[in-house]
Image (cartoon, rainbow, N blue to C red; front, side, top):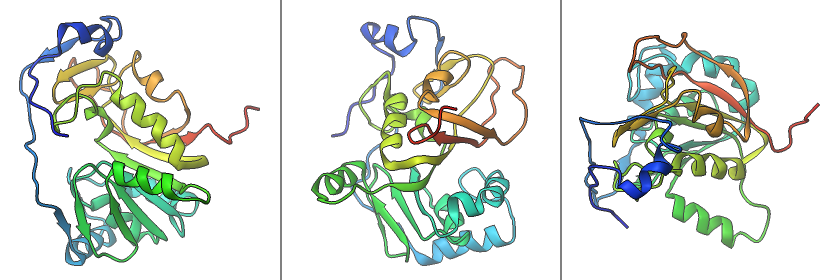
Length: 252
């Protein structure tokens, strides 16, 4: 179900979105994506083009950078090669192509938009469809060795993509990821990080010392790739952070 564009957080929800008014909110530039009833088409030609860029180590993808390469190199055997990988929230299959190039056994994209693809080893599914398949499966539920998400969770529940307003949408998504990720499996997550928490409504959340611990609460922080946090107000970085599902991890 698509929802109408909401320009301001309703007053009765503000305490929830700001975690008891501890996180500032700004209203300025907004983006409201209109629904497209036509499925998105991912072709082998598109994937092959991304894979050529990966082999050449060129800046590529939605954000035209090289951030993913050192992550893939270091976690190749632990989380990618011959592993079942999932990608959460994506508009273009650049992460999918990189995982296929690094010899993932399969890649499953879980995305609200309907995506059609006949690319070998690449499966696309909506969250609702994925849930239905999990519920119908009489055997063990499908679990992934690693999950990847770049610039997605910070939008959850802000209404930018015609999703319903949900003050805890990002936190709920993190809980759902623990349910599809193998015990001690790896989550490679990239969201905006800064010294101060901030909500730029309806664009995104910026995570700081207040909300970030809640986002990570069911995971161990293994490693952060990238530079140090900027000190300028309003500035942020968006590195890959390697997290490990606490489920199945030793507490010793």
